[in-house]
Image 1 (cartoon, rainbow, N blue to C red):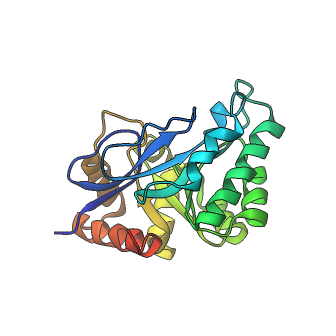
Image 2: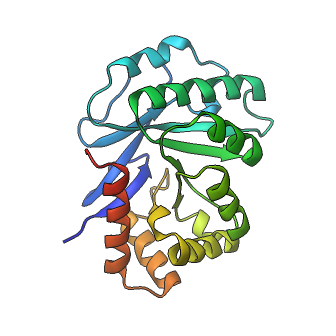
Amino acid sequence: MTPLVDIHTHHPVADAVCIRNVRLTETVVAVPPEGLFSAGIHPWDTAEAKPEWLEWLRTPPQRLAAVGEIGLDLRSAYAPTPEQTAWFERQIEWANQMEKPLIIHQVRATEATQRILHSGARTPVILHGYTGNPSLTAQWLQQVPDVHFSFGFRSLQTPKAVESLKWLATHHPERLFLETDDDPYHPITEIYTFAAKTLDRDRNGLTEQIYRNFTTLFPTL
């Protein structure tokens, strides 16, 4: 039976292939005891970030699947744009060196994020918690050719994101992922069921498509 894929989660997920998020906030990294994970300095932490936090990435465990979540969050509560940008670009360089995909957090920063990824990223990009409309989705595909889109429960409550899910399922199903993110109340099984119903598709077929997407993006894991 084809397993479900949870491309971005903050919690252990039973009965699924998942990439668990680790926020780098110090030099000693709390790596999950088993399973795949991603690691990066979140834009919320860039005001306090130190270069030695990234030294750990020189010799990461083989279970490190991706760098992230990283990116830009330009709301006033977080670090100034220059600080976030510097750490974002620095981590893209690490991902390029390690040949690891990027898991991206971006809020109110679409143009800046696209510009930085377009010029700097040489590995695949996953936009987690995606909420853009189909027009913006097409723009992302033009600006960042190896971009992928992940939808969670909260994003699928947004009508424009639902329309993007439908558009991707028709035009670019190979770019589609689902996730639980930091939501402990809606398991990945529920998100697959909701997405399949929204798309008027058999859930098994959707599961097989997303698992193919995962093995294509992570062929050595």
